[in-house]
Length: 172
Image 1: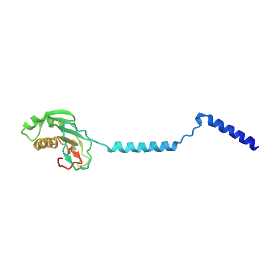
Image 2 (image 1 turned 60 degrees about the vertical axis):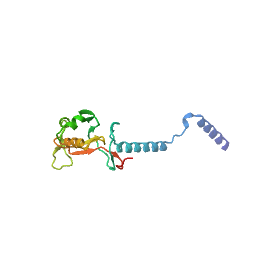
Image 3 (image 1 turned 135 degrees about the horizontal axis):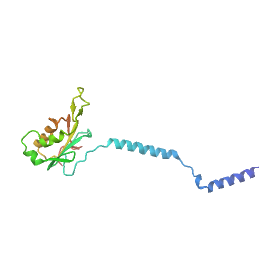
Image 4 (image 1 turned 180 degrees about the horizontal axis):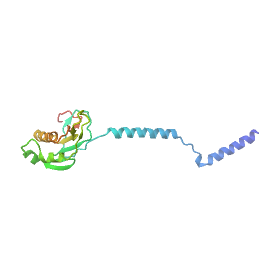
C-alpha cells in the first residue's frame, strides 16, 4: 500500500508543479506596503502648504516657525502692486500718492465679501485674513501704505507679511 500511496502522491506533486497558476501569493506583505504608502501620502499632502513667490521678489528672512495660512494675497513687486495676481496699480503711482491709503487698492479690496470673524465673540463682520508679499528692498513707507490700506476701511482682521523661513536676518 505504501508503494501505491507514494506513486499517487508523486504524480499529484508533478501535476501541481506543472500548473502555472499554483504560485502562492503573499497578500500580507502587499497590504503592509500599500498601508505604508497611504499613511505617507496622507501625512505629506496635509502638512505641505507653501506660497509661491515669483522670481522677481526677494523676500526678507525670518526666524518664525509658524506656517502661513491660505488667504488673499497682495503682492508688491518692484514695479506693480497686484491683488490675487491681478495688477491694481504701479509702485510709482503708489509712492507718488501723498495720502495714507491707496485708493485703487482699497477699491479692489472692498470687493472681497465680508464674513463673521470666528475669533471674535461679538461676531463683527470682517473680510478675513490677508497676506502681503513684498520685495525686501521696497521702502517701508510704501509697505506701510499697503498695510494701512488693507487694515483700515478695507476691513481685514489680520494682516500677515510673507518672509523666507529660517533666515537669520544677516546678509551673507
